[in-house]
Image (cartoon, rainbow, N blue to C red; front, side):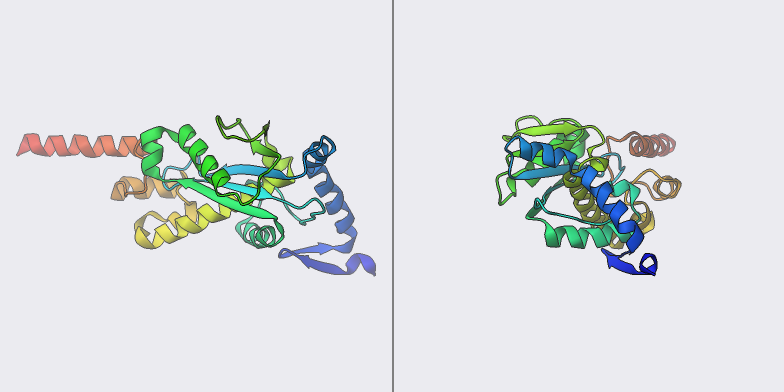
Length: 240
């Protein structure tokens, strides 16, 4: 009978027989955190970004400091989770975390600085908003130059470290909510569906309506639309 009992955790229905497996999986995601604590690090932060590859909208960085005795069922890389699970996990993370913060850079900053520099800037903004001083920061991907804190770069860290996974969800949900708001301002593009990424729908609407103020003009697909528009304008000027 016990195997049929279910618990609702962060919006997930998990069978009692699976809770043990989930706790074992989560324990593996704490490997880097536990190793850092063994080496004397008491306050550990995780950081990740969302929106680097999008054609429109900001790049957003999330930073999370989790308590040592944390368990969040279903926590994983935000890209692996459906939207409803991300939203539920966002609420649990913000409730249980010792600290969380976000930083962002707009599309205009991305065009001016380039996406890598803008991502670093967003991460530094998230760090500067911290109300706690971590002993170390785990980052998914490359280390951030001149950040002022010890950092460890973990390849695919959002699926290996609980702290980074939590940060990835904070960044992703924050950005997705922003893109839904932009969808009300620019309804013709379908931002609420693709969140500014390069889908067929986005490409179709971009070709039909041209660019809007939150599009990244230095990104190739947007650049091509701009070039076609300029070419058409020149042809009209020549005819006139």
